[in-house]
Length: 307
Ligand code: GLU
Image (tube, rainbow, N blue to C red; front, side, top):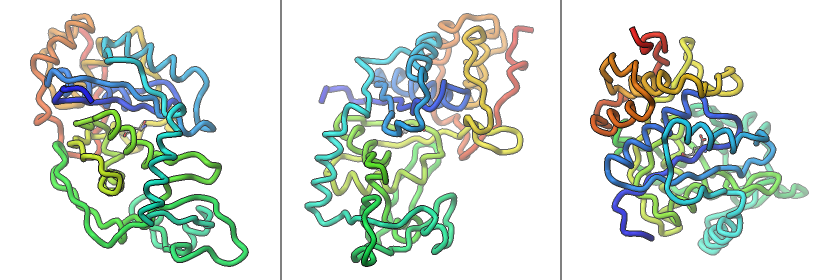
């Protein structure tokens, strides 16, 4: 681990090219890292091979480069790190914190009340799988305690894993390691001190802190930025047909992303190049100005065109 006091990262999943929402996360985490004279690492979260889109990795790298968001070192690919995740799994198994689970998503959804978007696992296989069933996934068993942390944007967050989440998957049906385990191992082993990402992951953070505690990794500080939503409140994704960042319109997109993050750039910057806009942003960035909200509406790009 290096001596950097601040080590941040951007961790896109290559399920498609960057859209406005993912650019906001990249820009916010880059600005936080650079204004702390810290490092900014790039991690490609490509564990979900079936959802990966061919060409997405190259498109993401090209967009970040075109925006001037340069990263430190070589990008890390999760698909090449499964041996590390296997070691962490062994460790969790040796602590007695893992059990095999036979339940399908459907069975869980049918036998539980929803908490937020995800069904709370009802504990079916915690004490052993029903006879005749075989393991689909591996789950980490949670304890009754409440996990709390101070998010640098969203404030105090606390969650009872037992009540709000239940025992959660760390190795999925199909043999892929789950995001929750991989992200904890990678943040821990890469020495990440500060995580800045979208607030869609706020509810995952207590699970990650729980795994950090079990695996003896220090907890990074967290800052969860509002997630860009359409005027009807939908998160940008391939399903809502989020448009990829247009490489011909980067300055206006950077201006919109800064406004979304509560940083009021002078209108005159609408005439500027991307590097001038980033220089302004580095000089004026204040995390405290980011809206304390889980979602935010995408600004109208026309407002940032030169008058
Ligand atoms: N790979 C996740 C995503 O693209 C981000 C994970 C993280 O920042 O922890 O939404």
